[in-house]
Structures are given as structure tokens and as C-alpha cells.
Image 1 (spheres, rainbow, N blue to C red):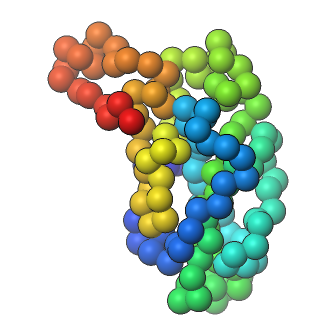
Image 2: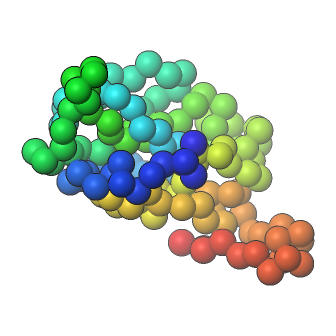
Image 3: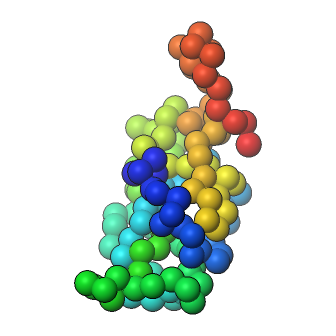
Length: 134
């Protein structure tokens, strides 16, 4: 889950590579994957599609146990809002989702009103909870 990503796991990121235009995407899912290289296109084994990934600098160390690197990947599932605008996530977003406009190398990003599917709910307003509009 996005909320469980520890910022220290992102310290060696040097760039984010987008495989498609993210300007039309309200959210992307982000995960930390173990991959064989610091920079190459990572393998993708989930349902859906890989949207982007982080590259790591030369100071990133491979795991002693597996020889792999922990890297962030950005992806979308077939039932996400970009493919099914009136589906399950029409007015919400998965727990690991963030607004791609809030992402940078070494910054895990966050949800916004846009990534959550629109303006804040009545309950959020009553509780004084606001999300950035980005």
C-alpha cells in the first residue's frame, strides 16, 4: 500500500520514468517491487499495465539475500477509473493510489480530491478534512 511505503526506501531514486502520458490520469497505484536492475525497465507481472517506474542511482545497494533492488513501480489495474469511469473507483481510489502529479523522485506522493474522484464528501467537510486540489 502507498501509505506503507517508507520514505527511506526512496532515498536512492534519481528519476521517474513514465511510459505513458500521466496528465489524463487521476491516480496511479504505487508499489515497491524487488527487481534485478537499478535502471532498466522492470518486469511487470500484475493484471493491468505498468505506467511508470523509478530509477535508482549507483549508491543503491542490492539485497544481500536476493541480489535485487527495491524500486517503486506505478501501475493501473483493468478495473481502475481510467478504464471504467463509472466502476468501483468512480468516487474513490485504491489504498495504494496517489495523484501522479504529486510524485517526484524520493517523494511518495499523496491523494488529492482529483485522485479520490471529485470534491470532498459532506462527511469530510463536516469533519474539517480537506485534500489538496492539485
